[in-house]
Every structure is written in structure tokens, then in C-alpha cells.
Image (cartoon, rainbow, N blue to C red; front, side):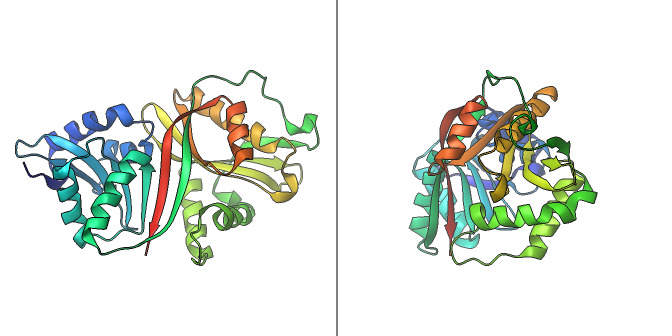
Length: 284
């Protein structure tokens, strides 16, 4: 049986069944699932001859592919291979087993070479922190937790650029400050950015909500200014962001680089537990 790849939002039945197909993976595929809920035109579905889904993924304008592909068989691989012949990727991001399926199809096309691969753990906050939330003001610094707005862009951009340099950019790729400023302003407009602020208005740490579904909120962009690290800021920030999401009836989820032992320990102390393996791959 051969599978077709269709734009999900063009067919009400396909969109509905795509959501049902991806529902068991709503947490791990939070960004993709939010796009399904929004009826985004980037969402594609692998369907059989009867129109039933066998995989869902998003292919964005930035050539980022976000997969939900629990089935790995020749029909899935062949359909992906045909799609990838004409749709090059810059990045694929998601649950490791889903990424492996995409990579198998990419290798069969012979059109792109893997440039960089990063391994992450995917974490979900399944319990509240045992400790009460406390401010770093009780330890070393006098800061407050704030929900940022558009007016904060100029003061936040240094933290954002440092985060992109240290945590995101693939090797040899140049930073684009203008593009990052636009991205930050978009997140601020959406009310997705939280930070810690000193009395004089300086930001010491930041985080943002990269996607939200009915049940989950994907936390990302977590970054603490170097001169405020190991002073309790990141823990205070993450505890407050997580509780803010819980107030909105959503569970916080995130992925963290396996090599960053400090971050892994921090998230575990805030009640996050490892759910699955996650991977981000960049291509030429």
C-alpha cells in the first residue's frame, strides 16, 4: 500500500483524524500539535488509500520539519522520501524515534548531508517542587518575577542574542540580530516571555513559551546572564513559569541538552522528570 502526503487543513476529516492520531504524543509534539489545533497550512498528513492517517508532520517556511511518525515501515519511508526530494530541510526536531524515521528517508534521497546533531532529554513536570518558591533575594540578589511586554524588547535583546549564540546556532552559522529581534518582539506581543528583573530594571534571566496546546506548554529559551549564574535565578524563574502554566491548566514541558548537567539537575529540582529522548538535526 502506498501513502499520500496531503495538506491537512484542506480536508476537515483529515485534520480531525490527524489531531486524533497525534493526541497520544501531544506533550512530545507540543509545537506540532499546537499547529494542528490552529489549522496551520504547514501541517501535512500521510494517508492511505482510504484516507486514514499514518503519520503527521509540519514543514514550515523556514524548512523546519516537526514529525509525529510512530509508524516506521516502507510505506512511510517511501512517502517521506518522495516529499523530501522536493522539500529540502534546514532542521528536523522532535522525538528521537520520529527523527530517525525522517533521517532514513533523507538518506535514501541522497540530496542532503547531516551537518550537526544534538541529543536532548524531553521532560515533563509531573509533580510540584518539594520546596516552596523563594526569591533569590533571600540568598544573593533582589529580583522579581515579571511577565514581559513589548516595552521590554530593548532590555531583553542582549539576553536573547547571548542565548542564541550559546544554545541554538549550529556551528559556522552567523547570528542574525535583526531576525532575532523580530522573533523576540513576536513572542513579547504574544505574551509568551517571562523574566527576572532587578530593582534598576535589568533582566537577569528569561524564558518563553514556545508553544501551547490544550494541555501542555512548551518552555524554551531559558537563559541566565553569566554574572548571575549559580545564584538561584534559574530555579526561581522555572518554578514561577511552571506554576504560571499550572494556573492556566497546562503542564509545563521542555527539552534539555544531555550534555548540560547543570540544567538537567535544575529541571529535576523543579519537578521535571524525563519522558523520552529528543533530537535536533541540522542539514546543509
